Amino acid sequence: MNCIVCSAHATKNSRGLKKNLSHSIAARKSFIERESPISITRQAELLGISRASVYTTPTPPSEGALALQKAVDEIYTAHPYYGQRRIIVALEKDHHILVGRDAVRTVMQTLGLTALYPAPKTSVSHPEHTVYPYLLRGVAAHHPNHIWGTDITYIRLQSGFCYLTVILDWYSRKVLSWRLSNSLETSFCVEVLTEALDSAVPDIHNSDQGVQYTSEEYLTVLKAHGSIAISMDGRGRCMDNIFTERLWRTVKYEDIFLKGYVTMDEVYQGLSEYFPFYNTTRPHQSLDYRTPEEVYEGSK
Image 1 (cartoon, rainbow, N blue to C red):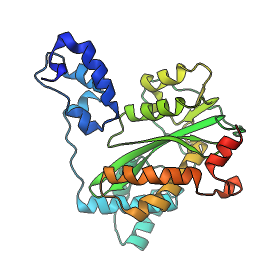
Image 2: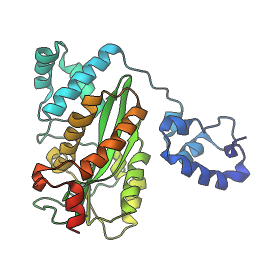
Image 3: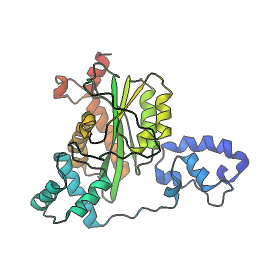
Image 4: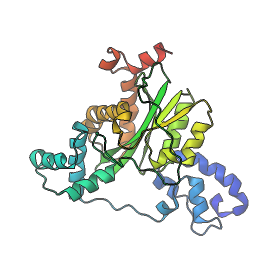
């Protein structure tokens, strides 16, 4: 019987559960035992998932909804400055899809999309979470590990979406670590940060004000390295994380859209090949046609 069942082994169980944090949310949910003397809430906490996710079974979107999401995804990636009205026009003109603003608004909210221009309430954080000030106004990255940026994007699959997060060195554009998840749980953001910190420590860490980055779980990892200055984009300042936004565009056009991945496993295998190529082989015009790895290692 799984060690979750025995409360006398709760401590031992917590160690084992923490080893499984790299598994998908669905895999972690399989460890839950509803007849255990340990509460569902405590089991979910040990597994790094929300209690609500234990009781929730995702419903696959319809073919029509997927077609609309796919079209909005492509339009936004090509024109991230488009608002809802322009996306509606592009849907009709380029994809022959007729929808209203409510449908487009729902898709954009589902995918976490916001047109890249100053607008109020573009980043919503948890009301009880700590929000740090933005420290990068007028500041440019001058050396590797000066500024790290992080963000989350979505990757469409045949039957839905998964989510990708990275830690990006702004000076060299090197992807220091990355993770995939089938949900927006905080744990996969913590994992990608922890991996990056195993090899280096930045002067400044910048993110948006999303609940993942304002969570105590995420901030505890940052604050454990007392030298890291924590910076968060202000509301309506979508361009503050422009280097990561450019990375998303590059990854989608050079890999995701070309490959048409069906499953999350396929995405993982594909990105396992793409990111080493991006870091070590692909020349960047903004880096005088050097690779991120060359700039990162050569400028330390």
